[in-house]
Image (cartoon, rainbow, N blue to C red; front, side, top):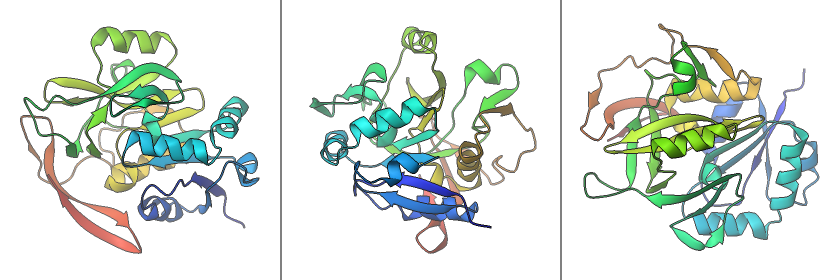
Length: 262
């Protein structure tokens, strides 16, 4: 039986090997799309938009490669789209990092840089999150469990107040909230067929694999499993900022490697 194909937009802003390995590990085939004119984009049934680095550079590459209109049309079809890191940031109006570059504007909010007066910036390491709308009922989105830790690496984020969270939720978005020292930020967003994470699920061990699998299977809302395989099973040291120190296996390049991050 032929494997189902997952299409990944590649604007050549970073190494996508870990993501490819994770998807193939889950039993799918990967095809990369490097230009919006590629017919494969119209044929795609599941699309991933990963990104790293500078917001302005990424969005300019996204536009120069003619992805804007085809991706907007793809969204209208209702087929699933998954943004990762700067891929998530692209869905916002813009970023303080590149004030002259507009995002897609799906969420009317400007990204801002973390306040470095009470913590190190960039935000690099393992952090947790919550999905308040669902967690209170023992549920969650795309297997994002509150007792798991995910790998973040970014200086800019959708830093939000409680009133901004309420406003975005009133527009139909489901939100996962992260906390970095005194600041709340959007760790993930979801609405209809769109899902995006600020963290890297492909570098987040078994917890991240579960999220990718849930997206590919479109298992959007599920119950939190108290003894899930994604629960942290190693000793964790939590720092005052909310970051943790741990060692976790991630799928990188051509083999499984253990990576230690702080």
